Length: 527
Image (cartoon, rainbow, N blue to C red; front, side, top):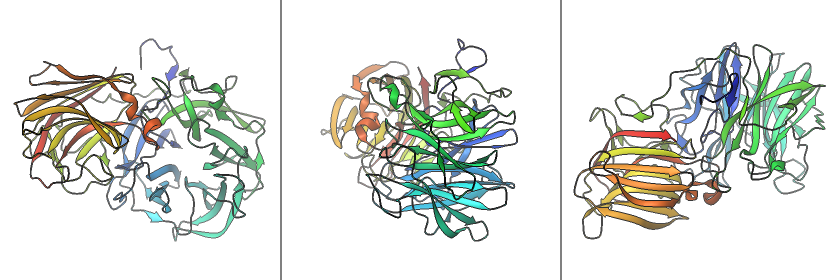
């Protein structure tokens, strides 16, 4: 936290970078939160907190290929909107696996007694349409599943959805009994009713959902009923949270997809997703996790009373502060396993990375899979978490063929990315070059011939302006490209639902190779 902050306040977002669709649960005085991961592996990071402000990642829920097979999954598909719940000593994480733009949406859940893992292999639910599933444990021992679906009587307008409910049998791990239509939202015509969460509070069942799509018109709405199957009464203050009336100039946009929690001290708090555009309406960091207070008034929630919006700096929860040890800015690759901040694109296939073959280095073997297809390339990356940042690394790599490359990549997806790479030019000379790939078209923005196998690389982002520098000796930087356009790394140009990643790669770009690249460290510093 920055020093100038008032005592007793916190700053949003609480999870900066691509951490969308947060879901939260409390067990005694411990809080656990999960978020969506789409095509990245491991799936569904899980975080732990004591004070709702300081979070530490304790692992991933889906960290084994047997739990998550992302082969062939297109960008911005895969794992959508997890919900985490706890009952009788067991944690449950339920989510949707989206095969493709038009393919199946498959809902499944996994369980664990320790939220840090191991979690079970998936229990796939039969005849469970829709996305954004949630579980609700009623006080009579029954368990219910909710998700969205097309209304059985047909859609009355584009993307018209409804929330439905069905009982879950924990013995058979399957849905049972009839499906009940609960609610199709407060804001007719606004569309995309999704993200249902059910709560029982003071004798009412509350159904909180998201409406308006995940873009600018995103919102949170709520309804209540005295019986779980309905009828549900629409809250006349809906939407209870949105920023769409604030315009695109306000720094926090597309607020929605919320979950709520009551603290052991009786306060209520909401976590939700939102984005921080910069350099225009460009949201490179994707959808991030924010925290906002909530109170109950006349049986309905009031979010941030008197303001009704999420603010950058807010009064902290009435909980004892618990900070975790800070994470290093530089990964020297001295451990034997990759730390939790690193991800692969899709399920890793083949033993293409090693921290032990050359201790103190990350060795990446060249795979034929390129960075430019919806495959599993030889890439490890981490989320961009700041509008301005600096990344540096050093690699030892000798390209042995015209297709072989290795280096630093900043990407939104396979068709929108920057690659700062070492390779061969047409004359067989070793060069370092900057490639911008936009809408699948590649432009070489700059290059320089080099004659060493050790190459220092640095990427500095000042807002949407990118500078790429290289050095043959430590800190003797030479600019290769400056003022490159960072908006290429935003979903606003690329489409989809994810945020930008920065990481290390090595590719044969279609050809088999026994070659590899060694990286001594990777440093990411927010500026």
